[in-house]
Image (cartoon, rainbow, N blue to C red):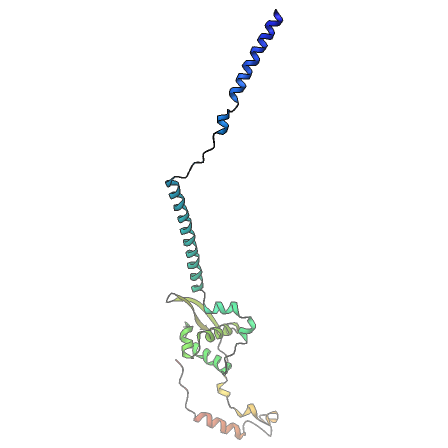
Length: 221
């Protein structure tokens, strides 16, 4: 009897467990129920559209700001700075203007600058000597490399430029231009006490008289 009672209790426990398991298992109805995706509302669509528009506007503003900065940086760069990037030291130092005696031009520019203790804005100087901005800027770089002038960067009329100041005046050759001694055929024999002497040289006498008779040049202003 006790055995039968135990078997009966065991069957009851099993039925209880089966019922419990059946409750926990998903029903067929649950399996058949399709998942419903939540459709975006008008508000969601509007918010998404606004986000995209904001992102596009931010990109446009960033590009505009970058362009402005680049333009500002370029406006601050002078022609000389651009040329220094483009040209080698050799090209600057060997700069020549076609059909122009560079030694004479250098002397004239430096003698003119010597009249301005505080220097002069380079654009005014180039106008005086009828030089283009590019040629004038290259000449300024050349003279600076030679140690003849110094350049001081300034802001004038919202543009960067340079004031040029004389540093060392080159020796002018005007005083000995056309001197007979430069082409004298007997220059090697010439001495103060020699057979050929500057004291008795007719060529020097004629050249001196000729130079003294020339009208004096007005000082450039």
